[in-house]
Image (cartoon, rainbow, N blue to C red; front, side, top):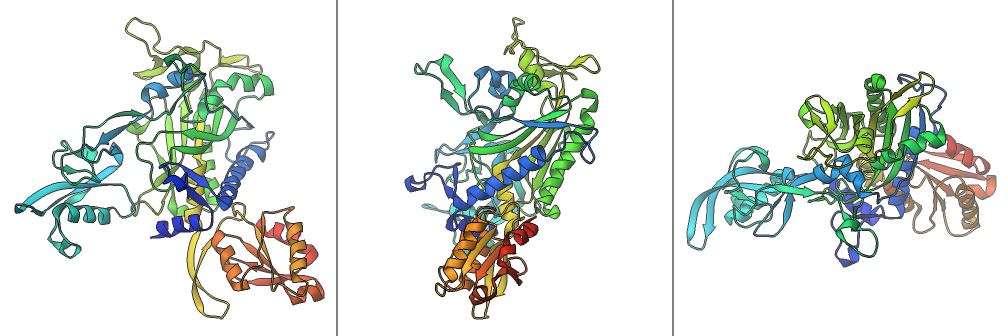
Length: 542
């Protein structure tokens, strides 16, 4: 229910809209509205400031194995197609899908779940006992969805639900050995799902006017490879010394089979990534440092530590190149109770990426990474042939750096902050009557609008004074002006979008030059001199 209310609020107040909505929408694509673009920009700005700009290059951060530097890049969305062959995306970047022969719909194999149920099915020639595995996509209310699908299949009404005999727990269809008695998520008959098959997630595009096979390229599925391709350029142009990180914020594209759960899984999304280059013998320490630093950032920005967890990947989950990966996960309200969804991955990538772009696509043989070769002994995908090693002019050593990658989704982070911010309680309305109050409680750095200015009434010089204050605050903060409706309703409108402070110009303002500042969280009000408003708000917001 919280997720339904939140998505309704997001559309009503201009945080998020379905892309191309006037034409029926486009699944997996979302547009950020006037407030949404402010919120997401604040998330990205906070990340960039905390990870890149505010870092003091001359001193070690708390818990860091030593001093380090940070810099940034902004790489193109379309790059040389050979990059994706050497990175492994061309061969390995896929999910498994299943198709429904009845509905012609396609589903991501590992997202279809279900449960065995038996019942008496009503058909044209009477009724008979039948047992099927009823399925649905992962959802906030999985059992409710399964109940509805089972009732529809057996031709029963809601009042007859007790006649259904459920067996076992909710299970992924990947645990089944046969689909013969499986009812697809939208099907009317069992046994209509195909066997799972691979589906590459990269979007194809064409470079140039001819459009031949040699002109095919791809929209990037991640921002990381642009950083690796520019590693040498950054070293030569900035004179950074290892250890150092290169940060990038940018769009990525993945042709998800079943995008879902609002903006959690989309086909177009924005990433906030760091590739941190370090000495191989220090990489384990730097991995722990970045894992803990990134987890702490989310709690500092307002996510509840009870809803966050840091989960180390098991050995069978690790990518073939990874020496260790941890996911920072959050309890999104659209998941089942106790379940977590990934916010960010922090991966120890070893020297896989730089070596791949030097030598060709790497694969694991035993405990070694070696260049993958064709039967004739030639490399399957040739690297650039460029030297991407690092020379330390102090120790006179040359080596291929190891890489630690904290990779966060800007859209998922924004969604998590929205979910965390959504609050409902009761507060007195303008008549003193208790009324439900819906509000968004953001960290002040993330709030889309920092302050709102109201004239109490539209007369006696109050609008003019309020407009002057509004103009002064706009130089420092994102500020909103509102003179429509009762002041209590104006407060509630600002509460609903997460504005932490409201300034009201009233009759006393014209007498002694003070205004009322109202705190959204506490509902307390204080009188402040007009000339002190900016400094007072700066102190409160920080």
